[in-house]
Amino acid sequence: MSAVGFGTRNIGGSWGGVSDETGRDVVRATLESEIDFIDTAAVVDDGRSERDVLAARPTAVWSTRR
Image 1: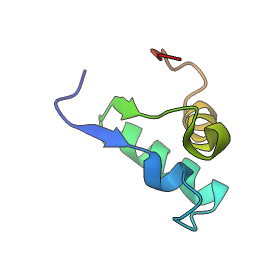
Image 2: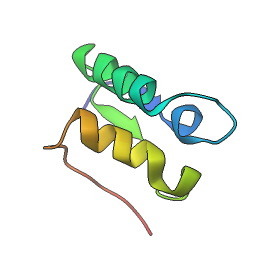
Image 3: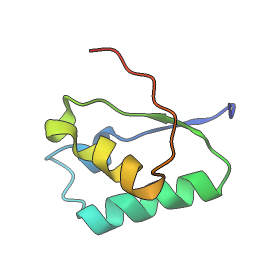
Image 4: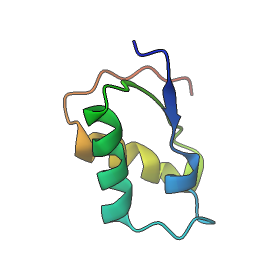
């Protein structure tokens, strides 16, 4: 796991004005930068950030708490 993580709250939150395409692009760029710890939550904008992560890396390993 990378020493640096990426928080997805701003790309998944309704206050950011980030399009779905931009959100997925940001997650892809994060993964390409070898950052492999991505913090997301299903409660943020009804799971949008989780969908962005899944679209960018369909084979991701998930760990979540509900």
